[in-house]
Image 1 (cartoon, rainbow, N blue to C red):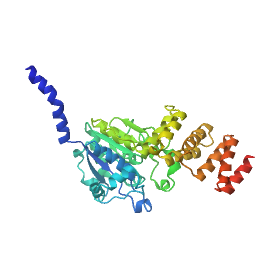
Image 2: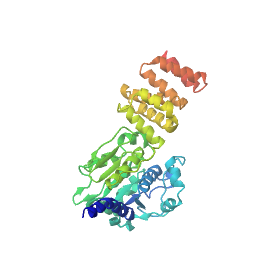
Image 3: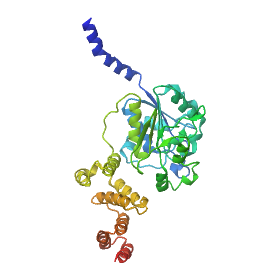
Image 4: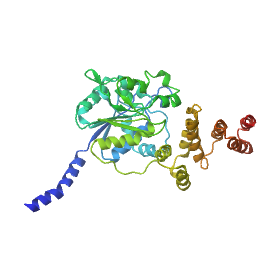
Length: 372
């Protein structure tokens, strides 16, 4: 009897593992059908968000199907084909064929899926909230046990009109998404045509809207809902879906843009010192996305509204990247900012360097005269 119990104890985990592999969980990824001409004529879905989430699901042995409101071929906005995650998917003809022939949401049997992951992109604002079949899919998962409902960036627009009885399903749920500050900074081309403000609409539906600073990674997990604030929240939100389905995400090497955003957050959150960051970048700068970090600093300066503490945060990031990334326009902005911070010597040094290099000479001389 003891031998039998010992055998069962030893073999039972392997039986469960075998069953999980034979019956893997299924995720329905949803993308907008709205895009046209790589976002020039109409905005579409974000390819970066799709590829990062898709790879996490596949690498964790989840079965993935892809649907869109109209079905058929879907078109993303223009994207960087050199990004590591995009290169992997672009070399996978099977998934490219799927994106060329997505399921229509009206053809989806929601009972076949354990989770839904709604990809963002500005196109999501125009068609996803008004797709009754997609609302039915989400409501089905909402009413079943053991499911996960997830989205990223503009994807949470899909929840705007989904009700269970008289109540919106996101009432009292912590939700994040592309916030008003991010729309103000980055949404100039299409934001005026949006049917609503994402942050305001979700709040009006009773959601508890949460957010990090712009461009930084933030994922909200609340009940069976998993939402990511922006493209840089994609990987963590996808891994939270894996966790919600009862699995531990496989370990992986972080992408350069992920590492860069996390470094910014560690510095801002006082988890890491500036000295540590300088030493880390000196040793490992090739594993970081220097232009991305510099751009974050630039936008932080723009968004600061002359708040000195916020200006300093932006300056810090630009200066951290300066040994590895040079842009004359960014240097001019940095000089202007140092002037606003009453650090005239630093401003003058930058301007003299620009003049010596014959870069933006007229602007640099004019600003130098102002400082004097």
